[in-house]
Length: 214
Image 1 (tube, rainbow, N blue to C red):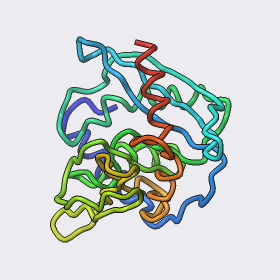
Image 2: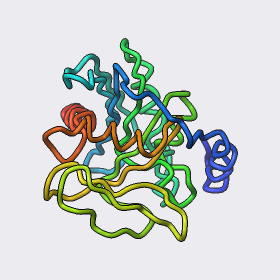
Image 3: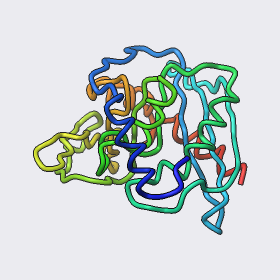
Image 4: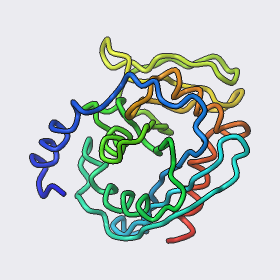
């Protein structure tokens, strides 16, 4: 783990060229992991949870949790470094291998084009996507109100993700590629994992698990 902002940015610069933004990624993964982190009231102690689901039935196949302390100061653009050690520890405890990682956060839609989904994807070698509740960068317009509608998330002239409506009339989510996926497939997987609610079931289950651990 880096000790300074300069070291952390150097790590991002070193790993960013390894990101595969083309994919296309698995069309029908048999196992999908949701990853989320919850923080205690002191803002330092955390619990990282991974929940592996069967995306066809949304049945939970495996879970793992790791607790600890934030591994890095809060710095915009470097937030992944706070959570990576605990998330990697939780992934290492799984007995069911996920074919896709769905992160509660961002991938390419990041000021340095290397969000948590990119970082975890490169370190684990697994396909990964980011699904954020709010945007970190970019401008966008509201998609139509029906499920499946989307608009581009643009940072300058570059499309860094999509603003995707997962349910009729609810707030959209912000989908971006992390590693070994293309954006079209990433959005298809998010819709597959969100048949009833705004957020993918992978995120909902991981969120519930890490909050319960705290």
